[in-house]
Image (cartoon, rainbow, N blue to C red):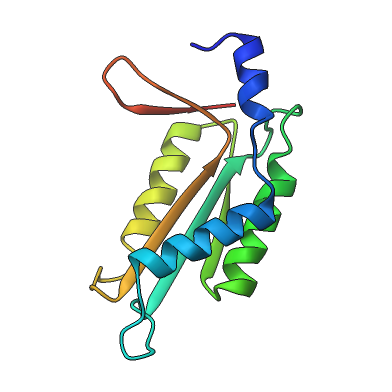
Length: 132
């Protein structure tokens, strides 16, 4: 587990949204090139997730809103946001992700992007654990 100083250093390493957008655009063009001027994917869905009562020291909501606008307005993706409740959080997160994954028939023309804004760590079994 990182110390408070290490966590603060990691937090300060956030990149500007404009830089992230440029890097994401470049990556998407490189990995998913157009075929005959047609997008590779017919449908793109994005699920953005954050805690209802998140860490007040992190600018999560501001960054998440900017990312949502980028996915929606620049890339024209279908974007949903899920706020993780304090009660039954594990169950609600599992349900939200399961519903998101099951949303379509998973054809080659579908892309699903999941983005979690918050703290996380690997558990002893190697599972990802989201935390506030």
